[in-house]
Image (cartoon, rainbow, N blue to C red):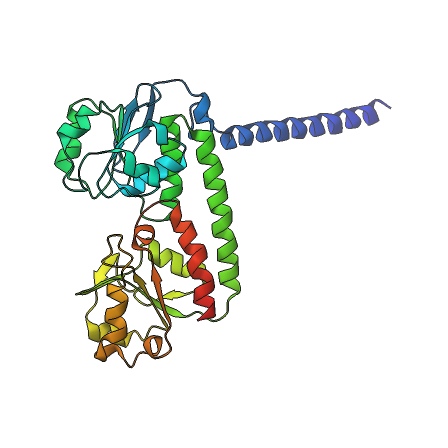
Length: 321
């Protein structure tokens, strides 16, 4: 009798040990998976000051919720307005034309001609810079004690990160999360439709024509083409690159997608007219079959939320042509 009880106790102890081990594992895993205090997921509840690492891998310290923000690039301006910060933006560049409210903001110069004096006169407590800015001007603004966040998104994932990080240092994390969730859902919908599209047309995206300047791999345009269900004709090139006319012809694109105007926001058809009327390109099927798409250059070349509008615009066109 004592022997049977001993064996029963041993089995009970064995099961108890395994149960404890399982509980410890669950607790450990949950700690690993849960966001830590101070992470971006709980940004709105974090105390000030807040520190974030920008796209230049520099730490940016923001002492309190920013009330006077200066944007040094149109893409940054669009992201800030999307976050609902329009009333806190006090300065933008000469090229910041969207949304319409941006046109009413004080101007601090162009991309590479940022006026440090104009920036300082606006008394900003946060400046958002970009690769188009003169680095010396950006460093000078930093030296004056003004927090500068450098945004350099290279792909859609980078734009998601920009929303998340700017949301964190401006106190708009909840809004940023909403935007990210919406954009990801829209991207996934188009991606699934693109994957189901068996015919993968070869598409050349052109920014300019003299010389011919195309979008290669690692660009927003390359990513949009792939998500929409196409193949980038110049995926063998890195970033944006020059292609001579013989090389362009050799790619035999099924569709030619060109920026509007001069690539600087005009709605003129300068680039499209060149491809339609250039005799050396007349034999391309994209030209003979009128398979061309003109896209708004302001949207196509800015690392902002309107890229998802462009994705939804070009996807059905790519599949119809």
